[in-house]
Length: 48
Image 1: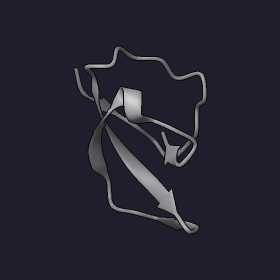
Image 2 (image 1 turned 45 degrees about the horizontal axis):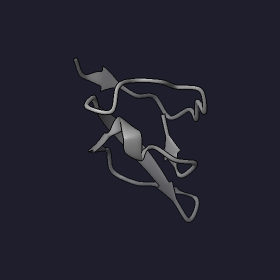
Image 3 (image 1 turned 90 degrees about the vertical axis):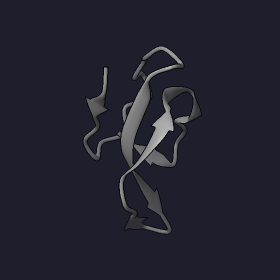
């Protein structure tokens, strides 16, 4: 299952570690290009 993630940070977001999530990563205040990461790598820099 692929989840399209919107640019909103949800600290309580829970999926199994093998899910791949397409995210937009905010670095230095700039929204970066979407990329696929494992859900278990989400942290405060990843905006769902």
